[in-house]
Image 1 (cartoon, rainbow, N blue to C red):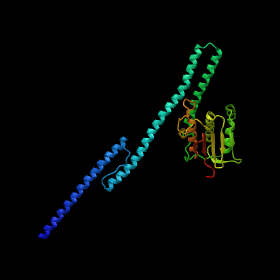
Image 2 (cartoon, rainbow, N blue to C red):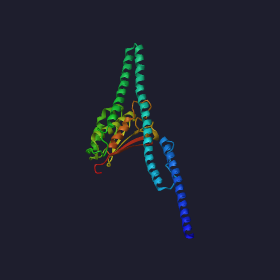
Image 3 (spheres, helix red, strand yellow):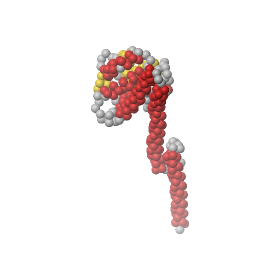
Image 4 (cartoon, helix red, strand yellow):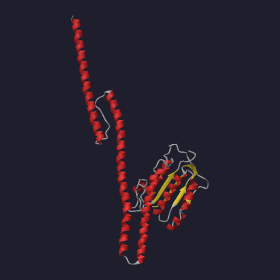
Amino acid sequence: MPVLIAICVLLVVALATALIVAVVKIVLLRRGFDELTIHIEDQIKGETQIPVTLTTTDKHAVRTAEVLNKELGELQKERNAYQDGNRKVAEAVTNISHDIRTPLTAINSYLDLMQEETDEELKAQYLERIKNRTLSLSDLADELFKYSTTTDPAKYPAKNSGQTEETIDISRVLEECILSFYAAFKNKGIEPEIELPEHPVYVICEKKSANRIFENLISNALKYAENDLDVRLDENACVTFSNPAPNLTPVSAAKLFDRYYTVNEGSASTGLGFSIARELIDRNGGSIESELKDGILSITVHFKGAEN
């Protein structure tokens, strides 16, 4: 009988111990999931980006926390992208509104002057200025249209999207594009220094994309370069456009490829030219970068070599 009593006592103790352990685990697990709930609420509200940590060591709860941390991290990235997109849209609307308002204000001013002016010669000058301002508005609309078509995947498919790769002689394309700007260079008093290899340099790039890239970069140089422009193509299919840029700073040079960023406040440019060039070279497997050194701005386009 004493043995039976001892066995019963041991069973009761074992059951009591197991029950206590179970209760403690349940309490800790409950506390862990309460912590998890608080962390999730804070993450969703954007009040914290600290990963979820639990006091419990339960492997199922820990695994849940790991999965949540991963998903919450992705959610945070999307939130940041969304907020950044909103900021850029707000900046774009501000910049475009400014670009539109400036010439419109000038046009209205000249129209007011014409109403009071009796000198026909001055009226003709005002009309010429109104025409120039109207052309700047037309250029703005054209630049925005070009950007919208450039970012249309149907017209400019993203790289690796299954489009047929096109091999072109980038030296020939660059030479033809420079020649097409001959009159513009002459009017601006610029004699570009051009250095091209004597033999073809083949790259993988859609020809119309390459043309658009060069046109945008040369047009930008014409707007801001005073009298010097160097254009060089090396054996590695890298094209560099260099011109003096005394008004640029390293910070502004780094922002040149930002959508709608403009160097000069109140300029006729929307800043889309560089952004379009970056979109196109990215889609064709290349890259573009800027560097400001000793007052010289260099824009280098790296094309994807045909041998790669």
